[in-house]
Length: 474
Figure 1: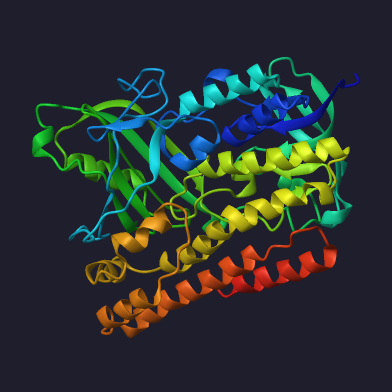
Figure 2: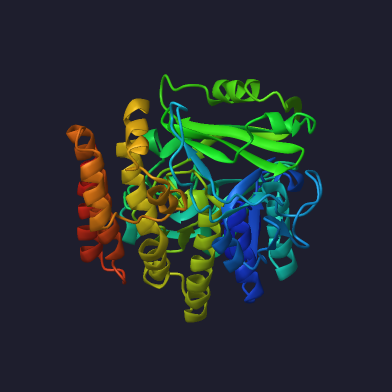
């Protein structure tokens, strides 16, 4: 039996934050859009609240609530854990940074530029907004493969659609589209199938991945004053970090993530220890979960002829925290503007889509790439080494503020001099720190020189230089 046929200007695989926001923006511009999502509508979004960059949410059209007496107030703010609003009322200012060995904390905290956002509410609202704008959202539809010329170097790729299968009826659908967008998450099911196009098809593995989990627990309000419930990151612990974040006076989020590698520690074991040390944290779990989290950099290109990637599929994730919603929203907004222009010009060619590459890499990708290199080098420091750097105010709250907020900001000359003075007793450790900083600076500068227009020769040279820089990571 022949497969059913469908035709849209844009077909998006995945209704996560990046895919849904992109669909909303394109549909609102009068472009015919179909979104194919393998989950049910009720299964969209993780069953917890995540830290999301306020700037990215605001750019996507969400009103950031006002602050009243140190808490968020407004119509989008939750009044209790289970209501249908978007933001948790608790404001994290500042975020305390504790030593990995828990012997102390940095002298100053981190200016936390995130707001805690309910992922299920965000997922549902973005999908609803896409539908209201005119996009067709098909749930329980599995994307199997691309249609078109999908083998060969980047310039030879010609994506013309995708094959989809209904998980309910079993029917196969051939979807023709001027543009196919991969928003399938870190597995990047479509992007990685572009055989031979090494500029775009890299799979995420090894240091690109972390394992994270969390539990949102009810608090015994009669015992909270006796407990340590300070918002904090235990930064650098076990090649990752652990946290406690209050949501309401009677709920707390406790979690952590570590590098995904053989022999890694089970973060849930550490989380259980954290709970055992806080008698006010009850056994009543309200939300939670976990799994693989992307902490890697973008592939060298996010586009090909008739193809683009957004969100985790495009590596649009802060490597030092694993926070990916803000990057997905930002990437979707960049992509939307370029796609609208390409559609108006009549073709989603590699040349027409290339400005999305340029916008992403010179604005956000340069920061994420530099932080990715920084993470890879510093992640191998021991608890003792990181604790030394924090005690000496070398790895300070001021220094960690941009890093945790997804911004690469190399130290100025005054900070470098202070680092040398405070760390003079550990020259080998300072050499590691200096190597990480210098390599990050080189990568950041290189990404800011990302080719503005598609040209096979200049892009090949840029890519070769980027590969050499990352090959310098020990």
